[in-house]
Image (cartoon, rainbow, N blue to C red; front, side, top):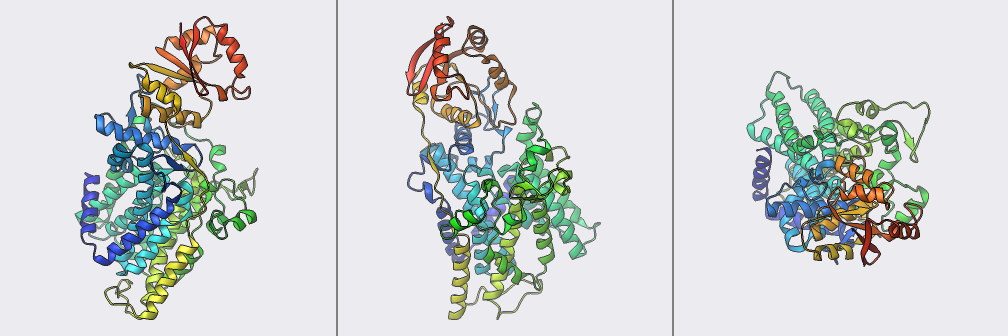
Length: 578
C-alpha cells in the first residue's frame, strides 16, 4: 500500500507540471545521458567500469525481468544452489528499479536493462531534487540548480562503476521532503502516506539508504521539532508508524533472507578502512575532464569509488547564500553536518590511513556499528550522500535568491517570482550560474568500460538439451562467480554461485568443500553426489598461483578414472563423470 500511495502521489505531481517544467525535464534527461556517455553507442552490450560488481547487477536485472515474465519470485533464483535457490537479497539490490525497467530488459536484454536503470536513477535523482526546491521556492531555476547539483555529483558517477543501488539516490529527496511535510502539528493522511511510500522506495532502492535515511531522518526530525517548536503531544508522532510501515515493507525480502543465517556482520577492521576523510568532501573529482588529471597527481585516492564525496565549490558557495533568512537552514545544515561526521566512519583518517592507528578516538559510527543490523554496513563513507543532497538543495535556494533577489520573499522564506518573466540581465546571471554548476560537476573522463556478452561456454551449455546441473571449478573470486551468474541468463542450467562473498549460502559452501582437492577420485565422488553432469574448468585460472597449474590438472585428470574431458570450448574444458 505504501508503494501504491507513493506512485499515486508521484503521478499527480507529474500531471501538475507546466510547460516550463517539461523544459527542465528535457535538460535533466540530457544530463542523465551525459552521465551514461561511455555506453550510449552500445547500451545492450557495454557497461561502465571494469568487470566486477557490475556483472553481478546485470544478472540481477536479467533474473528479476525473467522472474516477472515467468511468474517466479524475483528475489530467489531456483536454478542456483538447489534446492535452496539463490537469494538475490544476499546483497543490496535496487529491485524496484529493475522491476520498472523489466519491459526494456525483455526487449533489449539484461545489459540494456541494467544501463536503463542507471540512467533512470540519474534522471530521477535530479528531478526529485528539482521538484522539492521548486515547491519551496516557487522557482524553476532554483529547482534546476538543485537538480543538476545533485544529479551530476561525482559521488553518483563514481558508483556507476558497479553500484546501481548506490546510484539510486532519488528516494532520498523524496524521503526528507515527505518527512518534512509530516512533521507538522496536524499532518494529513496524504503526507503520512507519502512518507510511508518514500520510505518504502528508499529501502527498495538500497538497504544502505534505508539505514542512512532512518538515522539521518531522526536527526532531521529532532532539529525540525526543535526549530518549529512543535508539541510532541500533537499528531506529529504519526510520522513514526508511517516510516515503520514503509521500512518493513521495503526490508521484507531481506528479513526473509536473514532467517537463513546468511548475513555475516562485519568486524571492526573490515569497516575501519572505509572511513572517509574531511578532504574527500572538498577534493574535486579526479576524473574531471579539465582538471581531473592535476587533482589525481596532487592527491591520489586509491579507494575513489567509495570515497568520492565532492560537494562542489559552486554549489557550496550558492548554499552559503541560502543560509541567511531561510527557515530550514539549521535543519538542513545540521543534518548535512551529522551525515558528514558519520561518513568519517569509525575514526579520523587521512589518505586512507588512521590518524591514530593504535589509540583511535572513536567517532559516532563506531558506536552505531555495535547495533544489530547496522553492523551489516561496511562503507560508512556512503553517509556522505546526505551531505551532498542538502548542499545541492541549499544551492538551489541560494541560486533562486540570486536570480530573484528583486522579488519579495514569502512568509516562510520561500522565494517568489517564477511566474514573472526574467529581465535580460537576470537571464545572463541564471545561465552563468547553471554553466558554472555544470562546469564544476561536469561528468568525468570515464575511461573504463566492459563489453558484456554471453561467453562461448554459456552458448555451448545452452545448446545442450535437458535440465541438468553444472559446476564451475574453481570459483576463486567474486568476478569469476559473477560471470557464472550472468551465464545462467543464457543457458538456464542449474549451478552453484553466491551473491556476496561476505554472505556465502550453505549450499555453495558445501559445493566448495566437495571440490576440495579437485581433480582426484575423492572430490569426483563427492561432486557426483550433487547430481552434476558437467564440471567446467577454466584454464586461465589454473595458473599455479590461484589454483593448480594446468599441466598438473591435465595429469591428475588422466589419473582419475571417475572423470573424463569431453569438450574444449575456447579456454574452457568440459569434464563429465564416467
